[in-house]
Amino acid sequence: MISEEIQLLSTSDGPLTWAAGLYYMYYDDAVDGTLRYRLGVPNPAGGFYITPTSNYSVGRQVVNSVAPFAQADFEIMPGTTLTLGARYNYETRRFTGSFNPAADFDNPVAGPNIVPQELTAKKPTFRVALNQEISPGVSVYASFNTGFKSGGFNIIAPSGVASAIANNQPTFFQPENLKAYELGFKSELFNHRVRLNAAGFYYDYKNIQVIQLTPAGQIILNGAGARIYGLDADMEASVAEGLRIKAGIALLDAKFTDFPNAPTNLNFSQNNAQLASLAYCNANPAVCNAKGNRLPLSQKISGNLSVDYDTPVSFGDLHFNITANYNGDYFFEPDNKLRQPAYTLLNSSIKWTSSDETYSLQLWGRNLLDKKVVTYTTSQTNYGYTTVSSQAPMTYGVTAGVKF
View 1: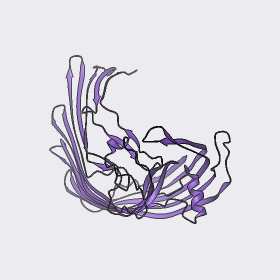
View 2 (view 1 turned 30 degrees about the vertical axis):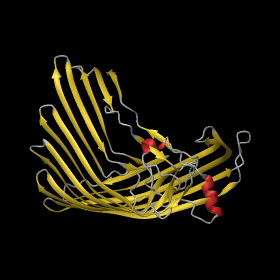
View 3 (view 1 turned 180 degrees about the vertical axis):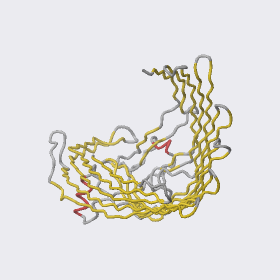
């Protein structure tokens, strides 16, 4: 990967400041010689279903992207600043690959080349924002932004590209487009001892990109549309000498507005990710309409609270920390079948640092409530069971450091 950016910045001290530039990226991504072989899947009655399958695939994607951009901030009156920005994205992607469904370990050879595919994206985006200073250290703002996220090819699964060509279907996932509205305020109060920020936002997605885990690997597909709106706030306060408190909360409503061909598993009904690894589901992947379902990994409510205390002692300095994070429940896939219940993580540490900052010793503990948390799971494996990865249980330890 190669990326370069050239910027030209104004040096004026007047009411107008601006920046302009050009961004370029070259990216060459390849899966070269992937051999997949499956002996069978677990049988709930014991043993394995023996269903030997194998294939050999090669995929490559070459990306060239260029984007000129410019932004200007204009103080239209004392304390009022208008921001205007624009960017033009031009990108080309080229896919080449091959697929041999008959290959195995004794004959790992590539099959016929897949017809090369090309994807070109041309997309302008822009930003408009207005910031009003209410008093020293307090301001309110409103902004509107458009966003663009590149499309591409799923090179990990060349067979999917070959099948799409054969069935006259799209061979790529489309670019994701976003319209974002935000209204909020920022403040520093009580002689900068308290910082308080809050914002409300609304996001409108078209062709939102969704990650799907398949037998071939992780791929990306498009949901037709989604919308997200919510509120978030954060606070940081210095309440006493050496004592700091940080807190934050986020309220979120994130749903698909249209997703007629969302992947699902017709025979899987388990709604608790913590038990998913124990429940064989006789996988039968199909599609469903996920309109109105929550976006994967979106939490309706989350929050955090952290307390830090620093104090000098005769043999150095001590730092105490305790942090709690509350996470609301969330789903892992668009069909909203696999669910992680709400949980709270509690971490803490005590650190000693020598007076000359040469030596340090830290006692720490993570997930002190020993919560069982699934980080990712999917029922879309075609293997007849779910796959699960989990967060570490309660852990604790000691870390020593020396600065040279």
